Length: 275
Image (cartoon, rainbow, N blue to C red; front, side, top):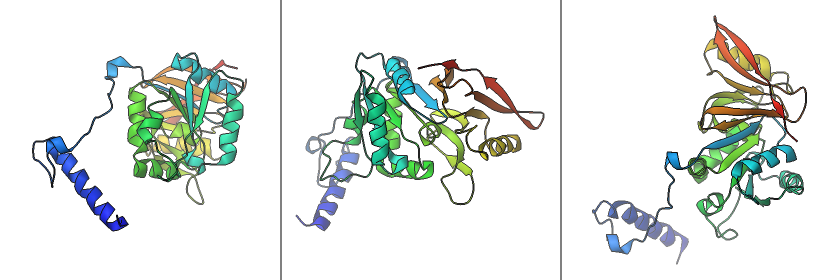
């Protein structure tokens, strides 16, 4: 079959499938012609939705904590390096960080071809116990996820209780919005998945422009109040509730930044050390 004919026939088959469940038949198909079984979706009450983030640095200690949150003896943890353009060095670091742990590590690249991957996004991500996302370019990460439909599947994974997390772009991606270096010249606002309500700033102590810009945007009302994390410090959320604040370095802090009297106010959230 020529490529053009394949595209046309695929489009007609999709249209038929989308209308047949309404009893409308579709083009050249009936209800009995279309075999479609949706994966089971857990109800919100059936699973606790979990996210573990860090401002920067998601090494062995954070992976160990993430593994414990799954409740599995040997959890399957998937590394999703979209923001780093599927950097091989990032994947290698992930495997090295997992080496001391009793986990089953996987890497799922986003730059793939159907000739080299025979499992769907759903089959990969929904078979995992945890998914950790890389740092990198958040804006590009979000665009690729939306184009591929990965954003929708990550939402389903969250609803099913699969633990999500990451640092930098891998922490920012779960919030409504935050500050990013994903565009040329200056830090800007990026809109993200919105699983966790409010805003986020990673690298709060590590990059000089982060703190003043985050406070300026929140005090002006351009950005919602939210959570700022130093490198090596992070937050564990259940749904949108902070359950634990953690760090792997004594000086690393987490802050809730809001507005009082027209100015930004930082509330320090003292972390517990993890190792």
